[in-house]
Length: 436
Image 1 (tube, one colour):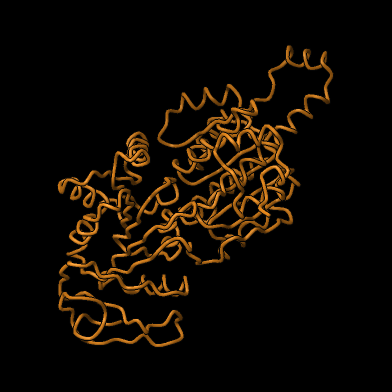
Image 2 (cartoon, rainbow, N blue to C red):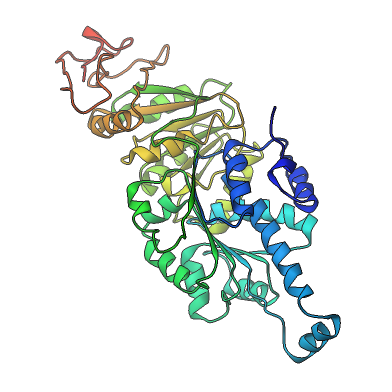
């Protein structure tokens, strides 16, 4: 029998928020994490992207800080509350803090929190880079229950002494592995040192590599572990396709792939910001509605592009890996790895943008001869081979390298090579392409 949100221990107000969000049944990470958080345990949770981690920490956190706020008020009598209110302003700092690496992720968390806060009467505030300081300072002065922040902007506000973290009872580190990868960990440590020692700490991430476990010992107290996805596991709902091609033909292959009208919403990942700009401009010139997302784009432009993509007004969104975990859009038909990611974990996160909510998605990885090494690292990491896919009717250049279907998924066996060249026809094997 399926578990319901009510059976996880959530109260009526939070359940009203769940209904407003349109959630009907908890995901595995929600089912396991929510009761632990409600028990007051420190938690380290790992699960694939798109599995509901945001709600897994937001729902129980808002319930806990709502309960603690009421208890704090009841400890003082009515007259004492009036005297206190008249003599000094009440604490306006948050009771809970969420730290997350990107603006887009922060906005995603805020949208979930606001839907619930509309039912509970609580207030959530977001502070992110790229937005006006004066507006954020005004929001903080008005007080909040839950603060969602990116590390850099929160540090700036701490230095300006306009944010009070002394009342934080629950601290959440979201996408911890990404914060480590992006170099935010010194800022995270500084933020955590500014919090009360007596607190509940939650760490949520897509993966929990050893490097993370070794850095959080002093941040969490006897944490409970929730591990939904094994390291390197890709979603069952994503059909993976390996597309051997030369670097010079990647754009041509992308345009040929987009000739399939069934691919109504496509996310394309490139390795660099310049590459993103070039690909997006080329697609626009070809008449394909597209936009770009990377760190050099203004916050306003990024929000506009994401909104248009979410609403179906853009067919293609071209982005860098920095954006990969901030693109929370349902109904993405395909992800295209225009460049093979250098980090195998990024491959898992990229393709996790499609095939969500039980729907089948497609992931196409364009691999040029100079990208064989990172491709093999992905296959070692996931312990599975990405099946070769040749686009019907497309004429491939000589010089591409087509994988040998007998290649190994472990590094212990010698990789086999064959010297035959591509003739631009058909799948792997013999005269149709070099093997690796």
